[in-house]
Image (cartoon, rainbow, N blue to C red; front, side, top):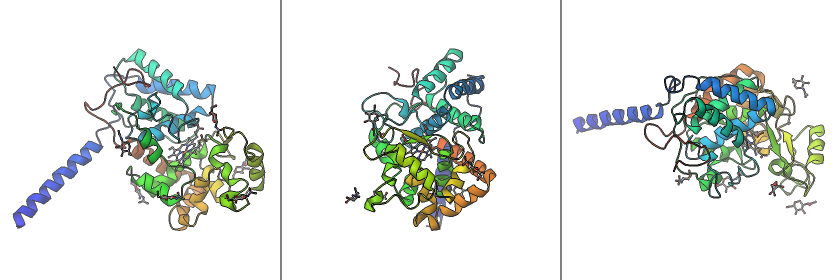
Length: 328
Ligand code: HEM
Ligand SMILES: *[C@@H]1O[C@H](CO)[C@@H](O)[C@H](O)[C@H]1NC(C)=O
Ligand SMILES: *[C@@H]1O[C@H](CO)[C@@H](O)[C@H](O)[C@H]1NC(C)=O
Ligand SMILES: *[C@@H]1O[C@H](CO)[C@@H](O)[C@H](O)[C@H]1NC(C)=O
Ligand SMILES: *[C@@H]1O[C@H](CO)[C@@H](O)[C@H](O)[C@H]1NC(C)=O
Ligand SMILES: *[C@@H]1O[C@H](CO)[C@@H](O)[C@H](O)[C@H]1NC(C)=O
Ligand SMILES: *[C@@H]1O[C@H](CO)[C@@H](O)[C@H](O)[C@H]1NC(C)=O
């Protein structure tokens, strides 16, 4: 009995180790021989794209997030088609930057054809976008391969909505191996980029049937600005910065905004103001609002964790030629 327990234990250790290895197959030097200039090429292309449109940094970071939460970081979000992820609710009229990813991919292909995955390009572009917006940096793990299927149901099911509670959003992060620290640090990406009226207009006039705006939106100037931008039955595609303090800078002002009732999305402000936040996210928001270095360190760690969600490695999947379609 004792021996068989020991054997089971030995197997447990072996299998746990194998699982751990399977999870850490990505490496920083994966393309050092097959595409030595990869990081320079992607950096250059991201620079060009951000110079043409500052917001593109935000859009590229979000693509990596929307990729990784659905079937892992496998570039499934990039696949065209009516049954793809692009028409899913969190992405339609919202996810953007696909043309920029095409440009990066073709620049990479012309230097090293057929070796770099679209999933890795998203991971590098996200890192570069944060850095080029004034934020932190981290060594990007590489070696992901591209998936063969998109998952529209998965996109609708797994991606968090701005109308969800902190508890529900946390469950969605936990479903992909991320925790409460990751929820808050990664939400800090909302320090750049824009949101459409359709995603927060419900807060402005008759919030949850109260006949009043969301009482956690404390800044009267911001409230009237948003009410003017997003009248009832107005154009839901109108956009406003997620961070009204320093719109295009990757800094910790998003968290300072939350402490001051200046979050744009209901889900953003809920990280500080909701009842659920009191014993969960509120203290982390306060920490990051006062300590930009801690935010940067935690954000970098969380991005690496997010980039490690279920990557395809070895001979799984493929290296797509065109990021929008599976190879024939
Ligand atoms: C915590 C749950 C999250 C929710 C509920 C959420 C929701 C949203 C919504 C509703 C928008 C505006 C989309 C639109 O109006 O079309 C948005 C934008 C954005 N999100 Fe999130 N998000 C979350 C987490 C994240 C994470 C983890 C990241 C990246 C690490 C991220 C990065 C961004 C960026 C950069 C934008 C601006 C995109 C642009 O300007 O093109 N978000 N998010
Ligand atoms: C789509 O995503 C859902 C939710 O993660 C998952 O249960 C399902 O197996 C996925 N389907 C495919 C075809 O990958
Ligand atoms: C949370 O998730 C549950 C189960 O999916 C759902 O019934 C509920 O409406 C959600 N609530 C919020 C506020 O997100
Ligand atoms: C989340 O995970 C990280 C390690 O990835 C850990 O350092 C951190 O303490 C965890 N946070 C919580 C709230 O469990
Ligand atoms: C506010 O919303 C509630 C519930 O949806 C509704 O009954 C009420 O008529 C609305 N008030 C106005 C002024 O539209
Ligand atoms: C946003 O624009 C798209 C495409 O032009 C349109 O189909 C959609 O109805 C608009 N959405 C909202 C919420 O107004
Ligand atoms: C942004 O926040 C800083 C620090 O709280 C403040 O000094 C500055 O006036 C704010 N800027 C804007 C445009 O709100």
